[in-house]
Amino acid sequence: MSSPSPVIILFARGILARLKLWPALRIAVHNSWGGPESAEKRRWLAGVIVDQYEDHVPQTDAPSTSQSGLGLGTAPDASYVEEMLLQIMFDEFEVTLEDNSAYDVARDIVRLWEDVCGGRDTLVKEWEAQAERIKGNVPRMEEGARSGSDCEDTDDDEGEDSDVDMERGEGNREDVPQLLDHSRHQPEVDEEGFTTVRRKGRR
Image (tube, rainbow, N blue to C red; front, side):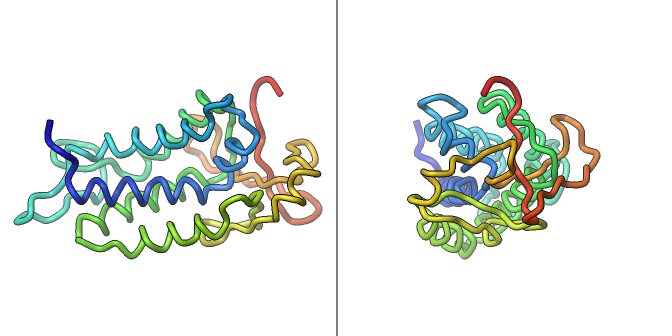
């Protein structure tokens, strides 16, 4: 069995870091909505995404073909990755997202793929540094935040006494379109100007 290419290894690092910056997923992991293996499910999700691109690693003498669509010789586009993120969030964490955040993550993943195929590691290092800085904190996200760099966090001590509450909107919600529905919905905003994650299913 051949070892993964350097492009795939770098890509996997970048995806895992980007997922750690996604407030909706961070809240789901923090609250163990995916069960006791919630953190492992995040790593598994990163691996699922990597698998979708593994057959599209460009040859050293050929340009990357990751612009759009999903066909022969073409890597998955943002819409395809978004659909996968929405489905896995629902299946594994019982979360339905109602704004565009899954698409934002998907778009970043496509941009990451183009960067690593071009031999650049800037995004990987940037996201890993951000993920390290917020490690151990409870996520918050301002209305309209679109990327990992827009995430805010509160200290663990504060977060432990006030669990992320879906009803009151004390946590962050990354609103994403209804599952498997690509029409964009307006985010719901609470009195403090934050959007909140809504969990679907049992509490």
